[in-house]
Image (cartoon, rainbow, N blue to C red; front, side, top):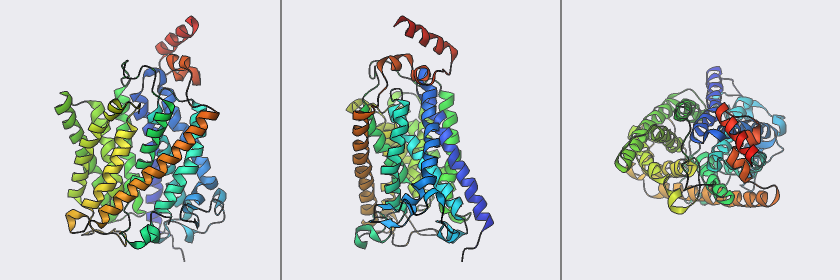
Length: 434
């Protein structure tokens, strides 16, 4: 019989609120990184995802993710349609005394931020109406199935995993479901929609670095709900996740700045903000599965590799506008795979039954193999599904804004307003001249 734990319930309501804050924080982070003529459009992509995905989640998203398993790929989307017909015994968090609706609300915030993350890859050139259509289709076809496969008892978790031939995968708070998923989707969408006009020829610097740093700070604050909240209880494991999140993020920021200093001669504010997010991403899947040394190691590797990875778009010629690939895909891969080296159940109050220690803590190669396989499965599933969605939408409603709208700026062209009056006046003059 379900027994309410008011302390854990209050903790989870607070954690859900913190994770919800991450989407407006992302709007600041991304908004500051684009040019001034598209800042409102960039922020509206996050707010649009917040509105649309929230509605879809309560209608059928929760059921499709955590409903009764259908073939290992998805839950029954009608089981709790409109969040009706449930009992608190069916709560994901029933074991810690947290009611069904609180658990459903907490998971809603994960779906929202995952979709919003993708928008950074296609900044300055994507039609807003096409973005909303893409967001609704993508969360239904990609996010819900992958979340079910990893967290809802599907193919990549529970008793399904390779017929128990390998240890169970570890993804404490969303390395595969959120970051690898959004990162590879961003890459595919950026390639399909094409480069910004002038990419590689014109400077496209962030227009407001204080916005970027404010967004990174708010993301860091909200991330404690993301990672510590994934324990579903106010206990020592939540404390471990909080501490590991702080340590890994701090180290990743320092590592990113050090890499910049060696490579470019300057340690930048943009690098500090980006290093913060890279560390947050990388520690997410491992937050409660590693000790302090593991958190330091993951933060160090993530800070260096993500700082180097953001330059790949110039080498390979894809236009990932705000480095979703370099930070979220690479950071998610780093955190997920390094679990195979750093995972430890020593002095831990949380460790999934069926998982093993990492290589550096006396385990064999089994956990590392598991982590690599799950990461690759997430890349392949999300990448292929996103490609199909993007190509269909490109051939039907179209994805890209017109050349004139890109030149004028999507703020004025799409939303009829500008963040800065001087830009609005300049854009109107350009339109009149044309």
